[in-house]
Length: 352
Ligand SMILES: NC(=O)c1ccc[n+]([C@@H]2O[C@H](COP(=O)([O-])OP(=O)(O)OC[C@H]3O[C@@H](n4cnc5c(N)ncnc54)[C@H](OP(=O)(O)O)[C@@H]3O)[C@@H](O)[C@H]2O)c1
Image (cartoon, rainbow, N blue to C red; front, side):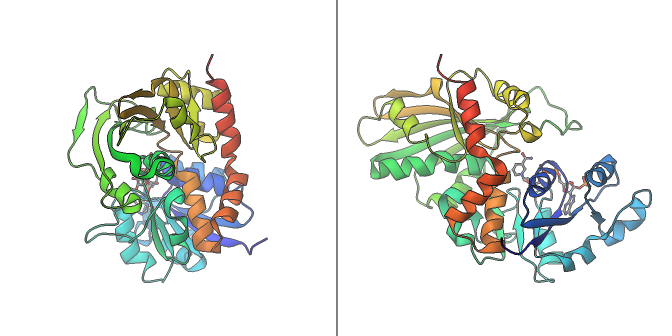
């Protein structure tokens, strides 16, 4: 076994709490603690789960009612890598103020950017597309949930059909809030997103000239994102069955025939006892795939909170252990059991 590495998770919200929970099952990684910024009930939750909680030095006074373990500034001296799980934009500030001065490697989440003056890295990670580039890197950004999900569909399509593909038009129907963000109220409206970042982010690994056109709207649901994708071919488009075939052995892609809604999938995950009610993957709604002339139309839903968690784990395999893709994949699979979850979902929502 590789020597045990120490990781600090800075931020204990939707993403930080999930990453921490899965790392407990990894004998090669110790979570030295988590970072909290508000003195609320989640401090107790973290402590009750056996975690050490650290807070910013200047906020120490606000946490006097809690049994915290020390300051974030000091715990960073004790770890090999930090997983930043801060709200979008704060990761960049943390890089400048905390991680770079301490020469500490860090993983950032998709609310940050790899472009412009506040870029956290020049690498946007997607294990399916560019795993090898993360080996030996000090600062890497994990793509956001939508960007990760799109890669799982686009990369296998390109591998199989290459220059027969003419263009991809995608409409992202984004969820309003996460299930546990009970403080965020859903507004009864459909919000238009001007210049969504997702297309440009995907092109960072899919190629800057890729004929990918993305639109996004936000709808009042907590139950996943839905991507509606039209794929144009040079000639007659493949049959739906030929499209579904290429995802049969893909990591983190389940092909479902009878899921009537995104919530039906969450309910199934809950009944099957999946951790955090997450599937950690995307789900092709196979009954919605059509092939008309030169175009394939498809839809898939994207588990917003869960999908990036095994990706963060893969990224740690590259940055902490310098593992090959195959080794990393096998180890991540042993913690997340993605194949088993995929099979269970596919059986439950099989063609009747
Ligand atoms: N939620 C998703 O579905 C999803 C999916 C993919 C990627 N992401 C990305 O993941 C990142 C985190 O999102 P989230 O949904 O987990 O957010 P969240 O639930 O709002 O949690 C954010 C956490 O960061 C802590 N925090 C506040 N200020 C901080 C700082 N300066 N440095 C470090 N941590 C700080 C917060 O602490 P306190 O609560 O104590 O104030 C909270 O624990 C964002 O970049 C987001 O875009 C989110």
